[in-house]
Image (cartoon, rainbow, N blue to C red; front, side):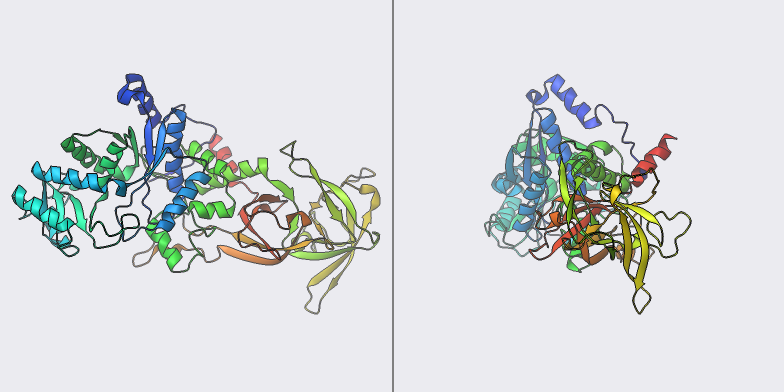
Length: 565
């Protein structure tokens, strides 16, 4: 698998799927219709890889004035739940798309059953009594042909009788399956008498106990596409070997034939995309839930503060490939920075407060003008309170500064953002030797941060007024995995060995401008000099909680610059 450091400045006019679609429209195929679908299985929460597929399928329909269905592949009642159905709906809507029809594979159970009967009558399907282990042994290997099941030559009448009895619940789970008569010598293992139906005495979230046999994905998928009139069935690359079976069923049933087209799934560095393993992380409490902001789930990145526009832009930039590659996570971070830089209101917050007393400032509170967003002329300005007692970041003061340290130190002068020049005159320490308070003087003529006499001050720091500051909790998130590829680990180990145990840092008693009190959940802000943050759902009337979406530093810009050289 190749590393892909996609250049954001070069975009192909059409990707290969669009070329196929446009050629079909030109040739009048399917009456020049474009009808796609997004068909998730409701057995977990969607992740960023699904977001790419959503943008592709709905984007094609939007671009070519077509339709896109949302279809739930609910053929496995053991793993599926209404909770996942609801979350998938929410994720698709949040990304900015509306579906033309909402369907379920279970809508077609009656039709799929009738088609299975049709295949049995044509001599193309049979009931097999082999166990899973026996079936696997009979199937052979990729380099060795399989062996016909001893039940393959049952009569059509016996197969019909057994299949009806399977449907009527006469047999236990796992004792019989319905298989297609493929080619046991085919080099494609999926064509070696694949299973169409298995017995599962389990209640379905939509059909209840009507059925105790359920179709396999490979059987239900193509026929569902056909029933809905899908023209282009867009799948990820692992389904390429399934395509001959997809086409075989449709040919044998003589029904509408959609075109299956495969593209490379999304792989991102430092990111786990396996739904099964993400479920393990949730169940084993490595994360707080599916919407933990460290998770690559859509609900997780939404809670972290990513915007729909940033995800759509990311999907557009990475494009659609025919082979697997790995996208640098720095590109995803670059996309949200670009979006929030244009949208997010600037505010000041102090994560590790150090008290500053301006001894020569009057015991009053004045209001200063601050720009809400220098990238948006319509964002306007706000008033921020300034008073005698302030908080600054502890890192913005150094008792014994290094040569290139331009922030506050004994006897030095800095500019307070939007406010005044201040000079440190003295400081106090506690019994442990920790600095707890600075005493400073200010230059009243430098209001607004302007030099009154042309003197140069190199350092500018942020602050908040103590009297009006609101207490907030800040959560700093890092990558959930330390490894570039979390799936690579030493023999006998696990992907969990690559977990970053320091991926979350919670900072309490931070100080912020009063405008952050009671803001809406998911509201995004740039905390000046610190990064982009959004209000979390854990916020209460008494305490606002903010998640860091991404830092201000953009490593992707450095990658692009290096590539250009």
